[in-house]
Image (tube, rainbow, N blue to C red; front, side, top):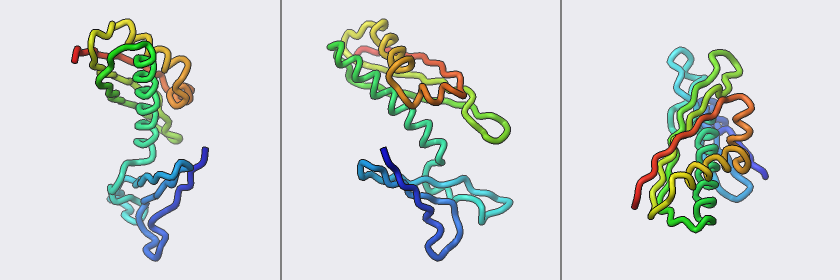
Length: 149
């Protein structure tokens, strides 16, 4: 896996904290820092997600992918799946994630709640590289709600 991240403020402006990530699969992703009122030259312009927001989003995407795939492989009629993540960070540098809660909302036809719980657990314990890696510093908890669609 490869990714090249380039500072977008370097081309003549020498300001801002925007970055463009170019992934090995040929996609691009913008990232930006938070504005800094005390030192505007060191802050971002709030034009894109923060780098750690993209890390959290990636973990959500990774585990939601697993949940949908596991349910589909179990021949469950899954229609929708979303994952809302909330995270806390350490107070001092490095401000790693210390706690992450993942709340899944799954809808489908006659999916047993046990199947959703099992899919989330399998992703969390075995398949999702992102959450397993983040689990090295953060306590990760999960919950879910299931609706019939």
